[in-house]
Length: 145
Image (cartoon, one colour):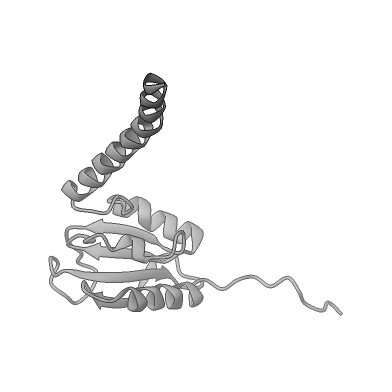
């Protein structure tokens, strides 16, 4: 009976500890990499995706400090870059830059710049505003006379 209980314990606890260990390794790797594991680092690919999908691009300049999970899943494209020269700030100054496509434009426009310590609410509001103001949506509901 003792052997059966020991075997049952091992078969239930061991898989959980392996999963926990794998999760710990992923978190440690993301932290060592300087990010949260959700941010991308290829700025050109992120720009192209933002233009293609109309989703705002959120640049975490100087690192994301684990902030990408503050974004609603799929609402924006998180990208961390070491420096950004597209605005009036110093290239290496830590900040969050929200860019988005404007209707009729073939490039991204800066919608808002936030300090790197901005709250999750401020970040979410900026992303929602950029998404709302994004490219004009086509309306096929019209009266043809």
